[in-house]
Length: 262
Image 1: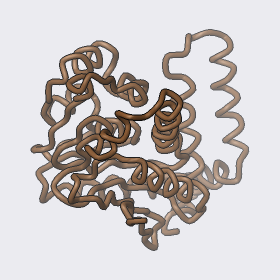
Image 2: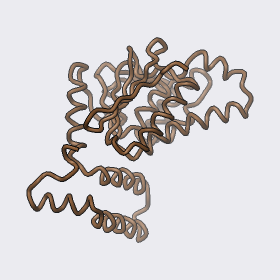
Image 3: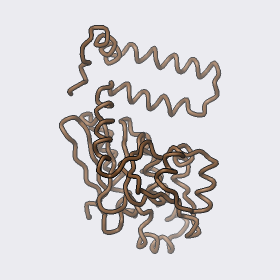
């Protein structure tokens, strides 16, 4: 099987995942989906990994679905299509629910599932020349499995527009919609990402995981006694952890916390 996904981890615990199917603009097929899923499963279980950067080789971040894959899918039964879709949905959920911070480095085209990859990452840095499109309806299809993540990233109103019109939108529009966290010129992109990586490395690893899970829990939840009790439980619990005590003591003693510098 061709290695479509590369992964390396540096001494700081920063893992870089690279989509490596540049000849096909990193378009999705069943092999790429399987390899992305396996890579993120491995990242989840590796305690040495603290931060994940997702990037792509070649001219495009991801141009959506591979033509050969789409030709095969045209002859699939409902059961085959459903199985295929569940595997793709599971891949996006795996990235979305990764317990470690994720950063997408987007350049070139991010179409269809490429938009989905951006939507499931915690932070998205894009070049000013990057372009986005939810193009599925042009093929008589819908962006179904990525829709929960896209709606969460850009809101239902904008999602209705771009899912139905299939019009492309610029990186500046993606920034305005909330899909992109920051725009940079390509020459500055890696420097800006590394600056944010350094900020993340200064934070408690377990606290960042808990913060990510907290946002997932409270987003859209009604403000009631149950939510108040749950948020109170979470802060009380983390205050009593070894990391919580170390962080507070380090602050009071005016020293670096144990997790900084490894």
